[in-house]
Image (tube, rainbow, N blue to C red; front, side, top):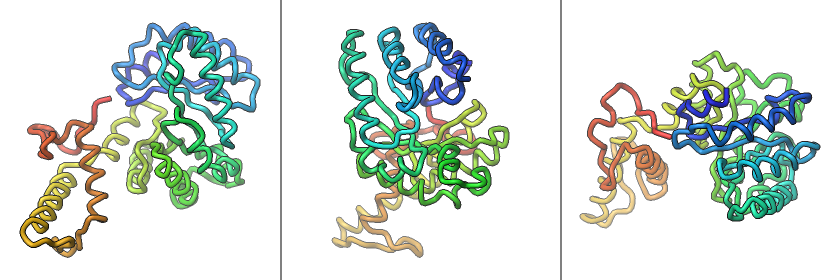
Length: 301
């Protein structure tokens, strides 16, 4: 399963030592991970693993043993059930000690944290600022639903948990971090995966967790701007530039829409994503052939 995940074409591959591992298999899973990492081919994907939570007796062994034995082969540590800034401080210091002992540069391994509880959400602003290692905040819908006492987290998850997602998103943006949406647990329902991905992208998330290779295509489609979106964004920027140069106008009307510097921020984000995905060039033009197939191009890892 680890080899299949590494070769999946995902942007980031997370090998799990937490919820996917039975209690009786924690030590064996950690040993298998350490043995596998040096030989896995990730194809350019970010290499990550998820440790057990800081409240458990497995966390420190997960970090120390993986970093000291295979730290050169990982990029990111994903930390579950983070509830306060002190949790991140502990992880940061333990990582630094393990890196030094393994001959790695301190700070080499980045950190992503899961917000999965009411306490974590209440403290998410401080958590987001807790370490320069932090790259992203991730919303863990299942554990969060259980913590707040929700009866159902599978149906209408964006209506029921909109506030929690928005609060995490605000904290991530204020700290300059990525905001990653959680999994679709009905993993065989690709229509639900696509719908969830579209909702998250519309809300402002940077990406979404996948728990099966079939999720990658609908997630990439949702988070990658399409041809029409990019053509419109390019046209709006050109119209705004022309109005400024020719008439000194800071707000214009295009069709039935008012366009000014504030509204162009949304279009700039689409163009920024498209540049990273190789859909537009440095001059802001669509790359020839990028949309030869129907639908948005799936970005490379």
